[in-house]
Length: 167
Image 1 (cartoon, rainbow, N blue to C red):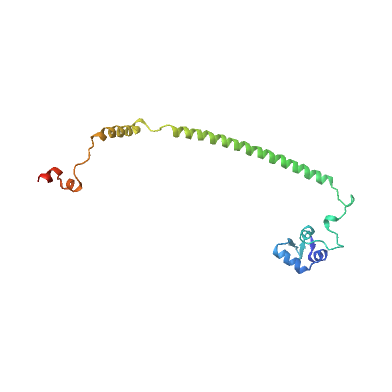
Image 2 (spheres, one colour):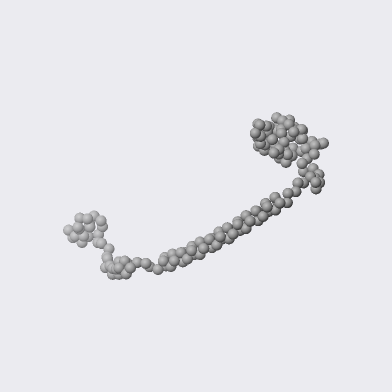
């Protein structure tokens, strides 16, 4: 669970107020217990402040084989459950990879169809007919057109240059 602010202040040699300020500022993470008392994990505490001499740092505690509780049945059950979960996740990953390949194949198929459709003229013969007619009439009309005689005003009033000179 963690140690109280009083115990923490004794282990690192700072006041409880300093620890509270560090918790409020986010420098150290702490949790409020059900009775309203703040608790700090020793690892978190020693990450920020070094231990005062005479106080043993949790990472320097010497453990013997008798100090470590061994529960092989619980550990084996957990390992078995974790292996089963890993196998399930692997099979789900394989399914996702298969689905991804299917989607890619479909995408490529539809892309080829779209490219073929864009390369060919999809219009019917009647729809294509006006294009050929306009091309043919444009080529015939082009040589027949001649520039108009006279300027804007003479054309507006219907006079020609010949009429003005002789008139």
